[in-house]
Image 1 (cartoon, one colour):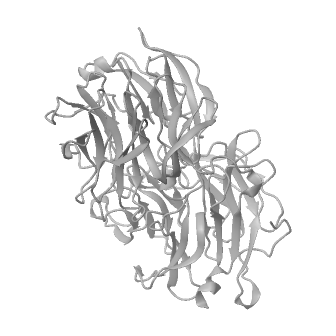
Image 2: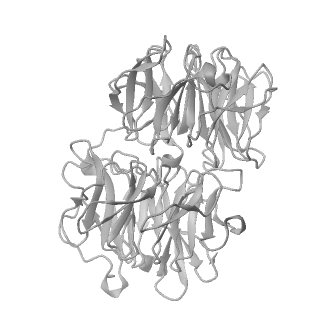
Image 3: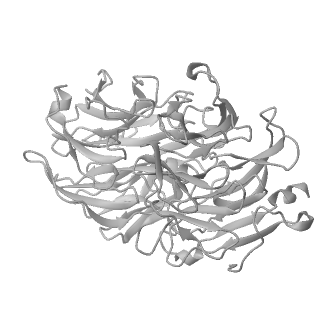
Length: 596
């Protein structure tokens, strides 16, 4: 690994030669969670965890030996890209604590631009506009501050990136009906209702434009998400005409396999290799959707793996049956991993995996009925939005459509009430609210919204074991936190008599211990947390206590009835490599390789 001063990035090597080198991380730094190359190709900003366990932004200029931390950038919270650059390469935008902020690289504290509780990557134009992705579409705000305005309304939209004209930008839709996911092109011009987004690529990874060095020709750089791999994929370059706004050639690989990437307008490319140590460092659905390549595994309360089981594959959601004998999970089709996911069942006694759904769409989020006889799941089959289906868990029946979306957006199930009368689900569109569906054997109920006032960004709703409470996530505080509300008040649509924030520094994916004495959740920095609770009278919660760091990329898990074991997908190389093995590669004049 090179530790000497390298040729200054942004100045292509003489003779059109490709030159590359690796950059080491600062001593004690691990868990790189993403990076961004400056437009001039001379600097790299990355988010990483230091020896004290704090996550912050670091700046590395390629003409010096060491990276330095940026003051005031602790706990950046963007799941796809930790930071983005101003066009002059002098300032950095990032999100922390639900606020979009900017900070100069020469010193000074960050300045708040606007609230951004659900942020999925940003890009900065030469006219001072910032465009960023959210779970409600693409938003735009002035870098000087102000209120964001909607550019699109389509549910989750991530990783926008401006083209050189400063008007058009690419972005990625990771979820949607068959044929609707992929990389899109849009413009900041025009009225919201008249603005049209054009689909460019079906890859569900971000795409960034890089000029070819002459005329209007250039390339879109993206990962080939159709090639399965352990949190990695080939990095591709496809010719793109920025005047005609069209692809005009075939995509070719330029590096493989990679887990993250960034490119400048000056012929510089940075990527991380598939053995990057720790952290959530994959600019793909491994971040946006919790996809982990590995096996299912049991962890104890200290984070030790007690055992792995099932086939190696690309896992996402896991759910333990009420009696603990079976596991339902969704897993990608290895022949078409970005388009097809089906639900499978694992019988713990027999050690046998059985396929549960058989369609060509994406089936996800299996949710058990309290008696274990049925499973509700979300599916985008038949080119539709995400809808709810149910099926007998013994496979003695067909998939049955349970309910349609209330507002034209996708819907995801999360919990079944202990008495079997209600199903809790949430939508993934504009409103992001919790909903309650009365269920009586067949699908004959009418959904009603869980009344929580002006709260937004709700999800992860889970009934308590006694059926009297709902734990859920919400960004009401400006970040995603765990809350608990009484269910009897909500179910009868009377004003709620209380609401308690359980998490202390953000959290998601709550799970109850079977006796109701403990509530678990995942913190925003990837730590399994435990909170002692009392649900016998007025709800009471103790102080959150950290248990262990979860594997990279995990967003979904489940807990044994006694609260002593935790089920989740685990990469085959979970947390075994030291930070010194993290590899970030800088390539100068990468475009020369395409011309040979």
